[in-house]
Length: 466
Image (cartoon, rainbow, N blue to C red; front, side, top):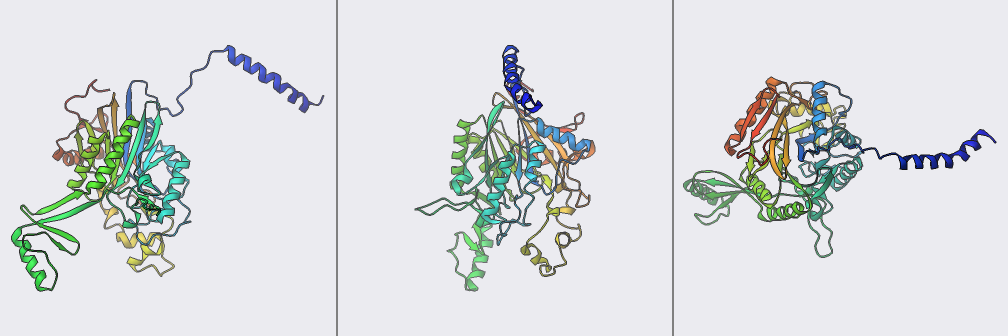
C-alpha cells in the first residue's frame, strides 16, 4: 500500500485513540485568553481621552511605552474616544468638518485592539468629517477589529443606544454623546415613513450671557436706533445669535437641552439593568454648568463612571454620589499632524489650496506657524493621565491617575504617541489635576513611590482598598 494511502487509512484509528485518551485524562484548566480574569472580586477599568491615531503602535519598544500598554491590557475593560475615521477615501469629505478632516488606515483599528482597548466612543466633532459613509465605514472597520462602538448610528435611536461588552468579571455598557459637533453630523429620528438621519448622539446646550440691566438697556437703545428689531425693556435680547439676559452678577450661563438629557438618562437607566457597569462618555469642547448638570443626571440614572474628552487638555475630577466624573482626560494619542491626505477645504483658508506643490506638512506649517502657535506650542495638550478606577461589589474602591506624556516639542513624526511620564513630569501633571479638581472638593495626592496620582475617597468605600 502506498505511504499516502497508509496515512489516510490510519487517520480514523489515530482520531479514535486521541478521543479515548482525552476522555481518560482530567480536563486541563482553561487559561483566560484575555489575561483579564481578576478572580479577587474587583473590576478594574482603564479610561483614556481622545485617540487620534494615524500611525502604528505595535513597532515601539520603549520601556515607558510597553509598561503603559501592559497597564491598558491588564484592565477588565479599556476605553478610549475614537476621534478618527477609518476608511480608504471611498467617501467624499463633508462641506463642514470638526476642524482637520480626520482619517486613518483601517488596519489601525487592530492596533487599538493590540494595545488592549475593548470599547470606543464615536460621538465627537469629527464623526461627520466624511459624511454618513465615513461614519459607517469607521464602525465597520472598528467592529471588525473587535472593538465595541457607541455614539453613532443610522438614526438617533441607534446612535443613542448603549452598546455592551461581556467580560469575565462583569458586563459593561457604554453610552456615548457629544456636545460639540457639526450640525449635519447630528443624528435625527425617523418620522412618518421618512428615514432617520445618520450621525452622532447629541447633547445640545444653550449659552446665555448675563448682562447688568443698565448695560443691556443701553445696548437695546443702540440696536433700536440702528433699525434692529428688539424686545421690550427688561426682557432678554438676542444679538447676532447670542442670547443676552438681564441679571447680576454679569457672566455666562450654559444650560443643557432638557430633552437630550432626559433621553440619554433613559438609555442609562435601561443599561443599568442590563449591565453590571455603565460608562457614559461625553465629548465637550466647551466647559460650563451644563456639563456638570448632565454628568449628575446620568449618575443619578445609574452611570458608574462619566468620562469626558474633547478640549485636548485635562479638566478636574469630581466624585458625585461615590461615582467618578472625569470632566476631561485630555489626549491619549494626538497624531493629527501625520494624516496621509487632506481635502481642499483644509488648505483653502491658508491660501494654498490651488498650489499642487503643497501637502500636509505645508498645511501644518501654515496652521501652526511652524510650531509657534496652537497645539504644538501648548504644553498641556501633550500631558495627560490614564484613569484607573477599581470597583468591588459595585462600589468605587480606588481611583489611580497614571500620568503620560505625548512628546511635547518632539518632531511631528514622533510626538502624539503616549509614554508613561517620568517622576518629575508626572508630579507636575498630577499637580495640575489637583488644582483643577479642587473646586469639586476632590482630594488628589501624589504617590512618589509609584509615580501616580491617587484620588482620596471619602468616606472610605466598603471593603477598603483592594
